[in-house]
Length: 168
Image (cartoon, rainbow, N blue to C red; front, side, top):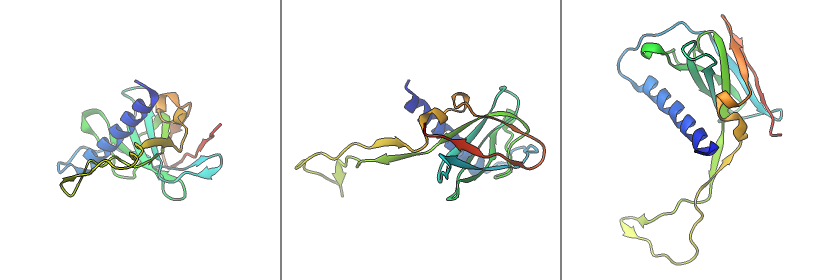
């Protein structure tokens, strides 16, 4: 499996976890979390629309958490899962501990191939459109938290954790 597949699988897993936590009608037990925010920069410039993921260094200690950056590159974390289905409140952070951090931002380019339009098959006349390609805005080396080289500590109280990335 290549890095792109791993990164996309990780990103999709995080989104699915957020949806399950946010859309479930049942009450889940909650855990006391510590607020975590920060600004993600790439070469000193804020990164808007990136997904930030914290994964506990030691499995079984801490809770994975994720957040999305706004136009100024600011993120706030939401714990997305713990033992026994424990969840954090949206935007409330995660539990104290050591975490690996991953950051993903991609864009697709090209056009999707359209086979049908209004129930009619489209005649193939002219050049075929390009298949979509994925462009990594944040370098792939930062996509997988355990391989990004970024390790942080969440402490009791409010945590402001800037994430400074480099394209080099």
